[in-house]
Every structure is written in C-alpha cells, then in structure tokens.
Image 1 (spheres, helix red, strand yellow):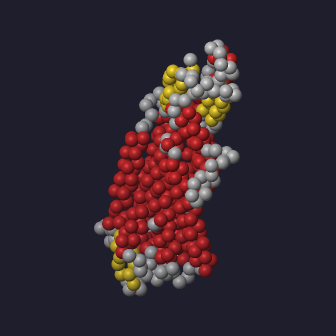
Image 2: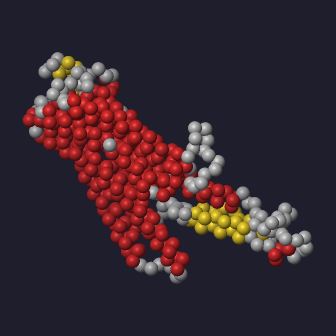
Image 3: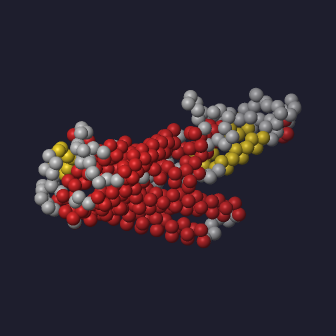
Length: 420
C-alpha cells in the first residue's frame, strides 16, 4: 500500500465518482428502486417517532428520549449517506460539491457511533432500573447530557474520515475522484480495526451483559410470588410482562442493527487486507452496493418494532394518523393512552368535585354517592364516574393529595377534592 488507501481509493472511485462499465442493468435498477424506498420509509417512520416523543410529556421517558435520539441518527443517515450513494453511482467522475466528499464518510461514521452508543446507554439504563430498582432514576437533564456526549464523541472519532478524504485526480482515467489519503500505509487498517472494536465489539459486549442480567432478574421475579393478595400478584405479573416486552423490543433493535451493519464492516476489513486483489472486480462492487443497502435499511426497521412491540407507541401512532391536515379529530373511537392519562391527571389538578344531592334537607349528604375509580399502569387506564341527577353547586370540599406511580417509575402527585 502507498500513502493512499487502496481500498478506499477504489471504493470512492466506484461509489463516489467513476462509472463501472460492467455494472449490470439489474443492479442499476435495484439501486434506483431500493434507495428511494429506504429514504422515504426511514424519513417518515423516524419523523413520526420523534414527533410522538416530543408532542406528549407522558411519552418523554428516559428510554423514549434515547429512542428519539436513535431516530435522529437514522434521519441523518437517510438525509446524507442514503441519497448521495445512488446519485454518484451513475457518475463518471466526481461532480458534486467538495464538502460532500468530506461530509459523506463523516456522516456515516457519526450515525453508526450514535446508534451503538445510544443503544449501550439504553441497555445500561434498563440494567439500573430492573436490577437496582431502589437507586435514583436518571433524570431528563442527565439523559440530555448523555445524548450530547454521545454526539460529541461520535463526531470526534469520525473526524479522521473527513480530514483524510479529499478530491484528487485518478491516474487511471485522469478524472477527479473522491478518495482517502492517509499519512501512513498502516493508518487506515489500524483505524478500521479500532472503529470495528468501538462501534460493535465493545458495545455488543456491554449490551449483552446488561440484558442478560435484566433477563435473569425478570425470570427470578416471575417465579417468585410477591404481594399478599390476588390483586397485588396480578399487578406484579403485569409489570414483569411489560418489562419483558420492552426488553424484547430493545434487544430486537440491537440485533437488527448489528445484522445490517456487520456485512459492510467485514467487507471493509477484508478489503483493507487484500485491497489489490479486490480492485477492479465487478463482484466486489456489486457486493459493496448490496452491503451498503443492507446497512442503510437499518434506519427503516426501528419504527416498525415500536409499533409492533410497544403499546404506548402504537396508540400514539394511531392518534397521529387519525389527525387530519388541520387538527386532530375531536371524536376518536380509541383515544390514545397519553391523552387519557393527561385527562385523568387534569381532573385531579383542577380541584373541582361534584357532590350529589337528591333533596333540599340538611341530611342530603347521607343519600349522595360519588365513585371515582382510577386504575393506571403502562398497559391500560380506566376512569369511571357515577353522578346522581342533581348537583349541589353550593357544596364545599377540602383538598388532600393523592399520588400514583407513572409508567416510567416516577411519582406524580395532585390535589383531590373530598366532599365534607
């Protein structure tokens, strides 16, 4: 190898500048169809995920904030890496702005690092919540700092790709091409190995350990009867099932991400070792395009997983799709979980209470009946109110406080009016 990485010079020549004459019409058609579909589905799906988390305070849990960060990294990849590759696939030489030559590899690196580091943070948070439930839960401000740190680390580690990528003249056809030029012949292979360890090996080990411990704890709790009554046991079983379903969704996210990105990273490592033999091979270029499309498709699957395995996201997705172009429909057959929760909380916070009165004598309170039943957990919320025919507008009440545990483990407190 000389100062220019043979693999990335060859790779950029194909995907970022030089037309491969032997590329089959079938491959060209696949590129023209698959990439636009990836961009459309990824943009729509991940935008809905971010909208779902930001539009409702009840959905802004720690796990959901991390999930929205994953969606943001997928959007970044969909806006830069996915659109540019099919465009330059048909170019004879590099005709795009110079900054895109440097931006494209950095964007891909940042997106992958953000995804793996965020998935690691989610696994660590689930470990603390399930295995050590009595420790203080991470606050939203700490979560925001972690997300900012993830982006900063991702940018810093990916910067070498932008620094050592430039527009040069390909001596084989004397045309401008986007290529990498490293200061030493071993620089690129070393960077590739370090990247593979930091992006996949280390995060996957941490994630596997965390979810293994979480699964063990949930299995142990499932085999232990907790609570003195039937209702307590049923509530505990529902909580365990909810946590298991959440963990299944998060584990599936990690598995899909690794499966999608491993082929492309293995290809990079192999070509760094035998770059000269792979150069000029039509099969290699076709293999790269297929591996790249598989990696880009990872941005599509997460929103589908949320809708399939998470009831809260599924209800919020329904609420969004039920909205017309101007405002949400006022009559919904199935209101969202978040809307019901907010309505339930507002009935406490406003401080209004109704008192029944069937006659006008002083002993009317004995004949009154008011029943408020509120049952809240992550899977269902039920609110029922029975009010008799007449209401005494002159009745007075006193305020007490009632608390409940929300779905993310925090405690909400609100005033309740009790009739005298």
